[in-house]
Amino acid sequence: MLTLNRMSRVRLRRLTRLPMISPREWVRRLVFWVGAMFVAVVAIGFAMLADRASNWFVAVQAPRPWIALIICPLGLTVAFLLTRYVFPGAQGSGIPQVIAAQHMTDRTAIARVLSARIAVGKIGLTLLGLCCGASIGREGPTVQVGAAIMHALGRVLRLPRLELERALVLAGGAAGIAAAFNTPLAGVVFAIEELSHSFESRTSGTVLTAVIIGGVTTLALAGNYTYFGHTSAVLDFGPGWIAVVLCSLVGGLSGGLFSAALVRFARGFTGRFGAWLVRYPVVFAALCGVVLAAIGIASHGQTYGTGYGQARGMVEGTTTLSGYYPLLKFAATVISYISGIPGGIFAPSLSVGAGLGAWLSHFVPEAPAGAVVLLGMVAYFSGVVQAPITAAIIVMEMTDNQRVTVPLLAASFLAFAVSRIVCRRPLYGALARYFLQAQEKTVAGDAAGPRRHGGA
Image 1 (cartoon, rainbow, N blue to C red):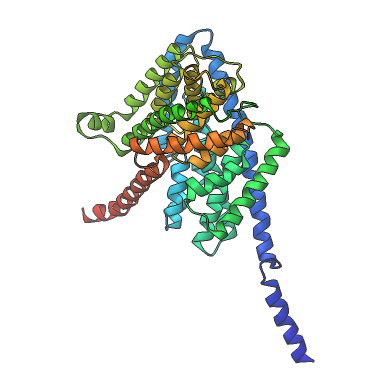
Image 2: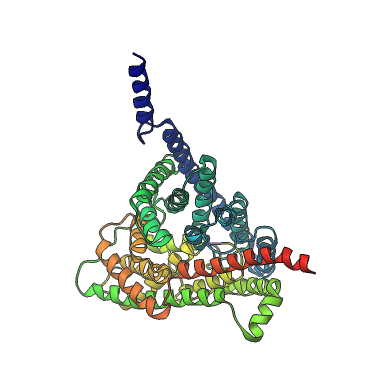
C-alpha cells in the first residue's frame, strides 16, 4: 500500500510538470497575457496623447506661424538636454534598441536598455517633441516601450534562460507595433522580418499570442478602425502598372537616401564639423529647431508632427498638397531625427510616401490616383526600412484594401532592391550596430574609470 501511494505521488509530480498542466507554467502564461494587454493599453494611451500634443502645436502656431521660430528651437533644446542627461539611451526611434537587445548576452545591459525609466522617458520626450513641431512618429517608441514592459515581466517571472527573455522582448515589440497601427498581421511579420530576422518555433508562439491578445485589447478599447482610413482603389494589370515601376524607382531611391543620411550621421563625422558637433551638441539641436521651423513655415504648417492627417487625406482623396510636400517632409524628418531627440520615423515616412505617390500620379493618368498614393507609401517605406513584406502588409492593413496586394508587393520588393543600391545596410540594423558599439564603449569606460582613479 505504501509503495502504491509513493508511485501515485511520483506520477502526480510528473503530471504537474507537463507544460499544459504545470501550475508554474500557467502562472507565467497569465502574467504574460496580462502584460500583452497592458502593452496595448499603453499604446492606445500614447496614441491619444500624441494626437493631443500635435494638435496643441498646430493650434498655437496656426494664427501666428512665426512663433514656431521660438517654440521649435527651445523645445528641441530642452528635449535634447533631457535625453542626454536624464534619460540617456532614449534617443532615436526605439526599434534599433530592441534589435540590439536581441543580440546582447549581458542581462544587466539588456535591463539598462529596456528599463522602466527609459520607457517613461521615451513616451514623455516623444510627446515633448510633438509639442514643439518635430516631424516624428510614436510607433517606433511604442515598440521599445512594449519590449520594456514585457522585459520587466520576464524579470518578475525569473525566466531561467536568456532565450525565453529574448522571446518576451520580441513579443512586446511586436505587440507594440500591432497596437500602435491596429495591424496584427503586420506586427507578426515585423517581428520576424525586422526585429529578429528569424522565425524560431518557441519564439513564434510567444509573438503570435502577444499580438493576438494585444489586438483583441485594442479592438475592445479603440474599435475596429483603420489607421489611414478606407480606400477602394484598384490597379488592374495593364498600362497603369507603369505606376508600380515609377513609384518603386522614386520611392526606393529617396527612401534609400533617407536611410543613408541617418546612418551616415549615426556613424559620426570627422574633421572640423565632427569636432564642432562633439563640442556644441546643444547648439546643433537649437539650430535643428530653427531649420525645422523654417521648413514648417515654408510648407504652411504641413510638415509639423507625424504627418498622419496629411497621409490620411491623400489616401482618402480629400486632401491636395503641394508637389513640394514630400521633399519638405523628408527634410523635416531628417532634421528632427538628427537633432538627437526621441521619436520614430514610421508615420512621417508613410506621409512622405503618400506625398510622392500623389505627385507621381500626375505622370500616370492611366492609374487611379488613390492606387498610386498607396504605391508611393509602400515604395518609400520599403526603401527606408528595407523590410518589403512588412511594408506591403502594413499599408494594406492600414488602408483596409486587399485588392491591391499584388501591386503593393511588387512595388515593395522593387523599391527594396533600388534602396539597397543607395544604402547597402538596412537602417535599423545599422543603427542597432552603432548603438551596441556605443553601449560597449560606455561599459568599458565605466569599468576603466575606477582603475584609473585607483592608479592615480
